[in-house]
Image (cartoon, rainbow, N blue to C red; front, side, top):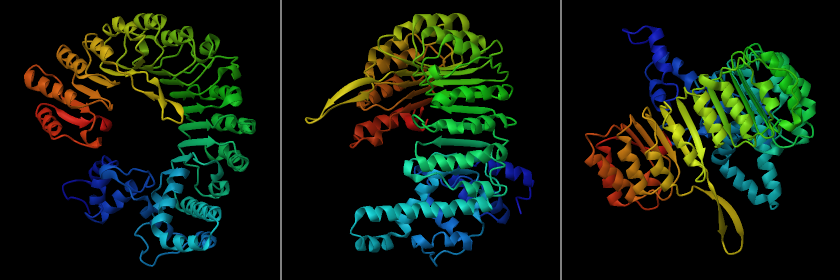
Length: 544
């Protein structure tokens, strides 16, 4: 039953728009049977996500309890060695919630199991701990219990789940092991409907062997992946055993749109050769932490639909690499180039090839050559995230004022800070004082700018310059990332500006560091905050 004035399709459409608002969805469960059946799949599609803040807080240990109650006899037997007790306080739930699961993350499930053991089995654990004088023995027992329950959970999920779309195997611990490949392989429909696969390979013998067993089956099981992310953790002595399997996995996909290669080292050449099979499908290509010394390219890729290219933490990419990767039909609109050890010549060539198609740019390599390329070749930038230093920031201003940017994210690179605690000397990074830079920025923003986000430290005088000059632009949104020195002087500057220039002010949304993260909140600061709120919508910058 639904509201008589609305057809079923409309109600479902409205509820689907609320899929990320758990607080509202929980209330919808109690409207009637139809609403309950419609809402439950949304609430339980990703129940192990660790979100403990605000209205979307999740008690994942309760989720584990709901899953365990649905175990069949085979799955319950897997728990016998670990002394897991089934509480009589819990009745069998209305649904087998595993049916609704769409996102399987081995680490999220393991962490949820650990919390469930902590909250549900605490008295038993204390009793056993008193009997076990050997602390290492107790730790080993607890770890085996986590592993056993996670294993049984996986078996139950693969038995019931009909809608699994994302599989994320990113174990945080080397000794955690790879999760039971036979359970994935033998399940029906199992992984056949998978759309996204994210895998981290660890340098550990047991993990490598189990991972290899699973990956031998994946090219036949998973042929409809839209997203594939392959992450190698450091040097992989056994990485070569995956080459043929991963190559076949890429080639067998019917419509692979997003591909990420992270730290794939010496196996990259063959993986790169497999990309040609997806040249008409790939929309987003992410290359992270690659040493191009290991990569030999002998043919052009001719990507026809590539829209986004991310290159981060990469080194030794030559102009020849770039020419093979980026060809005449290269029409991307989003480009990320950060924290690379790549020459200005190569970066300039990539920017030039992107040309007037480029709308979104994230980069941190500031040289005269690159700025000249941006001026000549990239006139249609709409969104820019740039990281400058106190040494090179002036290079960007003549170009920045000429752009037609709507959105600017302005970062100052962090500085190395020496810390001496008396016994030990170590290094840390900190945001530099960029007051002078921000004052210069205030006079060099493009007239078209509507959104500005600033990530650095600066004083209240620089903030005043920025606010007063913002009246010359179309700036609607200003976000100041948190920094420790944000204080009453900054709030006072904001309050004075909005009171004095309330008629000329164009800002509609202001994001500032939260007052309530400090140990002591001054009453004066609260009053200033309330005064600012009378003139503009104010949010914690962390929430925007």
